[in-house]
Length: 236
Image (cartoon, rainbow, N blue to C red):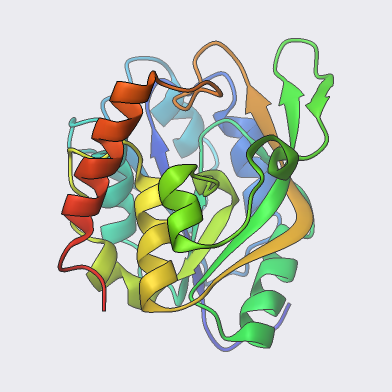
């Protein structure tokens, strides 16, 4: 796909040797020569860094993570991205071949600030499909109040305009997850679009950073109060 700008992919890694090669293979195949993958590694103790370096691809840039949890590891990657659009990626999923093309066409069509796409959920051990639509699990759609009550922003299915960086960063430590934070800021400072295309295979395994289960009501209420408090000053 010819374009007069480049894109960035932000990845936060930590002990991801088992799946990182397959993930990077699926991303690099879709990038132009001037695009970049910014990997913030939070001190992996396994073979993650060696696997990444084995690609010998100038588009891949490895930076040291802040050693302060997943949110800040992603914030570090995002802060070092220079592209017009920033795609978020986990270290263990698989991008389908048309992901970048479809997302960029959607940005051009709607002139929006953030795009979320659907995903196929599969089991890491058996490779069998758990659910053919992540959207169906979370009732995924835009809406500020809707995504305060029940978040449907999933980072590995998101891309956003780099203009949002000045509102997104720094990411507070006291919020639950970075993806909900980014999505809500886009809701109030631009336009978030949820498209129905299933553009990644979302891997579920024992070590997933995000879990598909709810906290108790008191924990959920506390998280939302902290989120709303932290959002003050970041919205229009």
